[in-house]
Length: 331
Ligand code: GYE
Image (cartoon, rainbow, N blue to C red; front, side):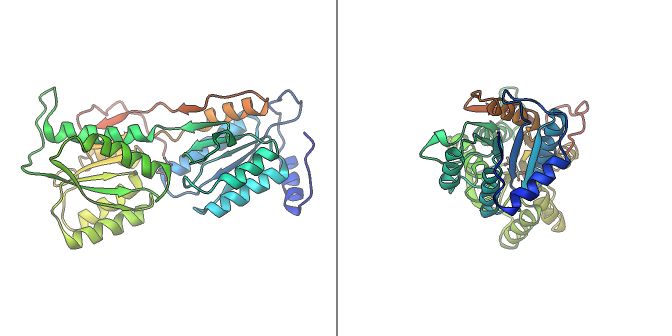
């Protein structure tokens, strides 16, 4: 495909790509495949692994990846997508930081004839044809899994495992992800779908820690300044959980013993905390999406269709599991 070289940025990009051109995966057109990838940022170990997975898979496949780190700003993602359009990449792959506000730029991509692959997070659109497919994880199921663990923990389960020692309501603190993002909304939705069926469970506080360890610490420190009358933390990611654990330890509270903790992502530090008894359940969210993103992008570059939704395989780790054989998580 002939590339336009109007703006200076495109000229710079052309120099950049020509300098790193490799043996290429050849689509039918006979030219190399160029993928524009707009990533949210580097807010968590999960995100860093997600980015690395895409970069390594693209290098392995000989696909030229135009990677842009939006540093947590939607406007930066929109600018990046516009630069991908100006350069006339073959495919645009992006992780939408929040659900809303993408119609205009995706219409521009469609008008430029560039297919769009959604990665990791989902978006709200009236016209779903503005993107070709989604690859990520089932975050509603992740929320359900977190709640299902708590039901087993506090109500006992079919294997007769002892229920947690508690009388009266089970009071839950929820640490939510970035407000308006699909993981924040979907994990909360799935969690409530299950927990709301059990009246003895009550979410007494829910706030966003923006998936950041520092904000997880701040939230927990502020909560502990107000009260210690809660039984559970449900956290939308491990970074916030680790920050909350720091705040609890400063007050002599035993995470995993005094307070039951359910966390999401399954980064190495969370698995270590599970092994140490400082966390009770870790719901995996698989960041290694690179190979599938590259595979789907190559199909789009060849003009093929892809499935509307592709979910990653993932699991749940609990305090009842034998973790001795679990390999290093790599993030
Ligand atoms: O849980 C968190 C990251 O979008 C599923 O974003 C991802 C989430 C993940 O910051 O660690």
